[in-house]
Image (cartoon, rainbow, N blue to C red; front, side):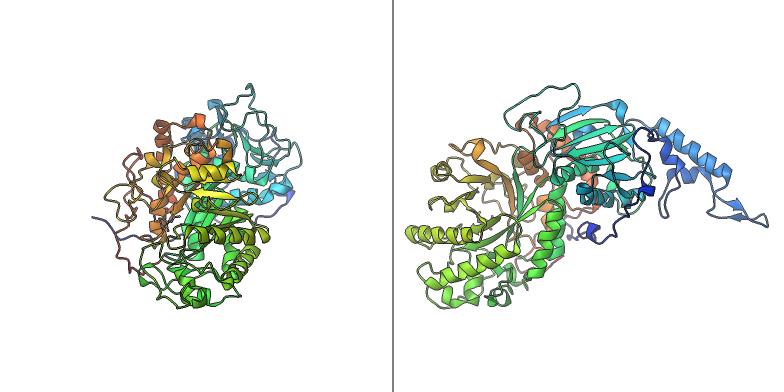
Length: 628
Ligand code: TNX
């Protein structure tokens, strides 16, 4: 019996609102050489207020007052000794770190486990960071503080002085692990090329953890890897007793493709800023670096355009099923792009043209071919609406809209849509797209569009997003020969609005059912005939939201398929292995449960235990106004 979906209470990770830790050297830990051996330190330092320490329970507390009474909460010397001893005993009895170095998703390029090098994070650990990497260190500390209860101050690291946790930004970051030689499997760069724009190296030894990268994006990805290597309990939002062990060894890692993304359709159903920020966090965990926002469609216009205010005032007030809709002000949108940028995620705004424009036509009938406002549309059909390609006012509109959206957008891309304009004759469509592409180019942005743009002339840097279900697509291959690059979103593998199975309560099946294996089992480098891997910019998993209206439903469709697509975008082809992926992925279930992330307990994944607290979305009538 499906249960009513409930969105988790938690919003996006609250890193932006936390006070940052102070940067004083007196808070810094001893240098690497003098670092306490893993384990001993954990028991030697009092836990901060609120922390739950397993040793506390064993040791007992209380000190005699002047009248001989015991003052609760103040440790006696004997109790303190017992506590230290209990801590050391626990360390001695503990087995290897519960997470293995090669459990990471997406699979790293190179993994060199060293079982003798397990590290345990202790209460007195500080993060040392080269100044340019400071923001990443602050974010890492923000992820680790709630569950550990440790203060984890962040301090500048003078060169060569490592601490228990050291983040180093260095343009000449070493990439090869000791004792390895350069290899090249043709799909992920070779060791010896440097760590590049997003690569990192993670070294875990008993004395400390070091992340090295040439860029802060690389450092951030390394920090996400470290987060995954800690026990799942690290996802708790309040302190818990745990041994914060990290498996020893070295990871050297770089992405296969530069563009790795997901799309959220905020037009069919509107999603609040907080929901979008939370999705950014989900992407960042799995090293996805682009969030494509489908901002406009027949059912709603969701981004304020000052020069055409009725787009949101009128066009933003509807949604599939007749709900209240909604839209982002310039400030809302700025909040999203800023939050995303801090997490090394680039927002790709989409203004879908010339079709999928009913909401705009309701607001401005002069854009409609017949100059008559259509009724607002709250159904789920596609392909019936379009702006008049023969009217000059349409191009003034396009120029204003793309100009304002480009000005609000820090990233390099602007997505023009272009899909399913079924009622526009081919020649008019092509002429419209060619003018619209030039208007985008004039804003300084690079054109992205659905692959229907293919027949139009090439403009510099143009990127097509391919969503076909049959990899034999001569028009797209021809556009690639004329210079286009491709983002791959094959609807029968990467569309996250497709059902997992016939009984999935929400979603579609027009492109087939997509279980986790189907989401994982394809190769972006060879998927479209006649398109070489060098022309593939990357992958993207779109989530259309005709049937999805709450945050919990978004997560249910994303997890666990999003990490599968992330692995296709990040990991070298040589690491691709379904039988191993499903086991690695299974370990993430407890993390999502602990973090309050809703997910589908897909039967093709050997979850460690079936979480009972995860609600299953119910099928909902299209007029469901529910919103998280
Ligand atoms: C096709 S694929 C669409 C969307 C729908 C989606 C539903 C593409 C570019 N357009 O308008 O929402 O199918 O699965």
